[in-house]
Image 1 (cartoon, rainbow, N blue to C red):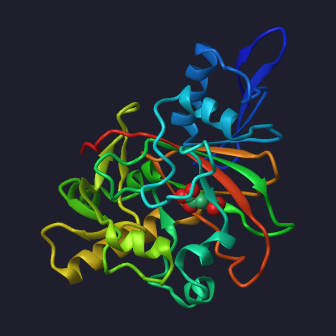
Image 2 (cartoon, protein in one colour; image 1 turned 90 degrees about the vertical axis):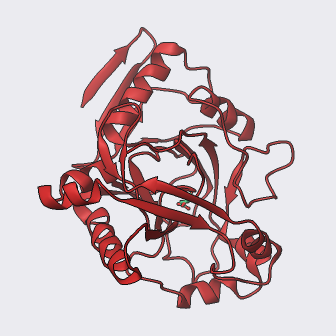
Amino acid sequence: MTVIRENPARTLTVRPVAGHIGADVDGVDLARPLGGDVVAELKDALHAHRVLFFRGQHLDHAAQIAFGRQFGDLTYAHPHDDTPPEGHPEIFTIDPRRYEERYGPDYRAQNRRRQYSYFTGWHTDVTAAVNPPAGSILRADVVPEFGGDTQWTNLVAAYEGLSEPVRAFVDTLRAEHRYGGSDRPAGDGAYARRVNDNLLVAVHPVVRVHPATGEKGLFVNPGFTSHIVGLSPRESHAVLELLYAEITRPEYTVRFRWAPGSVAFWDNRATAHLAPRDLEHLDVERRLHRVTLIGDRPVG
Ligand code: AKG
């Protein structure tokens, strides 16, 4: 356990919760202005642990937006979400019950049958943007009695775990990331049409240098990476599957059990995450709200 700040009122503590990624943070009320020192300490903790977990917080939409803004400018909800809560265009709500409204009536049933590869579902947020989000802050509002955990993985550890010749090879590569367009699984809902009509495409280095820490990390993910530039489709598929197998190795991951009031703050420049898929056959409520920090163009 590292005690990183003490004041007469409280002690801010950061406790790692897994070997490669994740820390619980106590002693801070996210609904209050943090002050420059605490912002700097939380940034350092985020860079060291990649995802920070806070429990028992009392944020509403406005307070979550205010918390996020202390770390940078926020994106509007999501490039394809046109239904943020009234008056809070920065809030992206994750609620599987909305997916059928968005994609069409049998979306969840279709999604259960759909399995592109062993790694389906793992992603880093919106890497098909030219400047993908730097970080995301997700707050649990309604959680099911069981299930619905989220997992994160450390992309720096995944890169560092590769053998030297493979690191030297992937250092030279660039990959295309794509979101939307007609190759996406369609539904007949308004959201699906919006995704299909609004294509995002960007080419990024496969190995990204973290702008704050200078560390190298893998920057490909099964959610958005379409192919590696310059390789044949077969070669690209084989290389990406190899990298995805490394990225999703259990030892690089952490799994978080949500409770109402929990908040996870992750660094999109050094992590990928897996939204839960264990509830798709159950009609249970799960609602979380995200704000998203605008990022830089990735540099290799
Ligand atoms: C995201 O915010 O990008 C997610 O994948 C949501 C994670 C979750 O629903 O737990």
